[in-house]
Length: 136
Image (cartoon, rainbow, N blue to C red; front, side, top):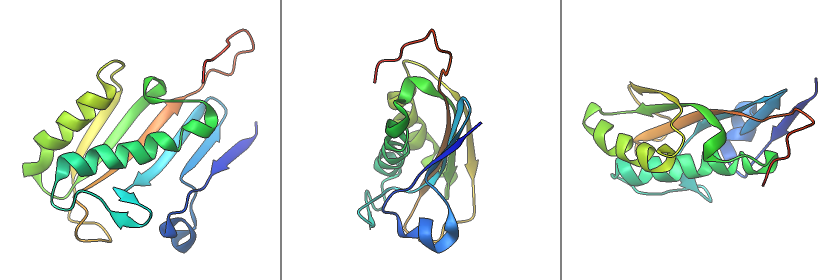
């Protein structure tokens, strides 16, 4: 089985030494993803926007594998405040309503950037059977 890795322009990937996404067999794992675009925090103070941007970034990491939201098996949302759970849940529902994954929502004490309210992870399935043709 080969292992494939996808890296992005996130400075944290080099600093910490990780890949944004790693595929092994039929599983694709996307690392903790913050609501940053070009290194700039999006939606400061807005957990709904931060959740949408973070999941948008995580879903973009699936594109090199020809995958999207419908292929996601599991999501994890890490929030710094319980008060943000409804906003994060609404964003999650909008993104994954058509094919709901298993999900976990956890409140944590904080992130490396104190302005970040939400960080997300996801796991996806890619069908590697030869008789299945996928649309990209």
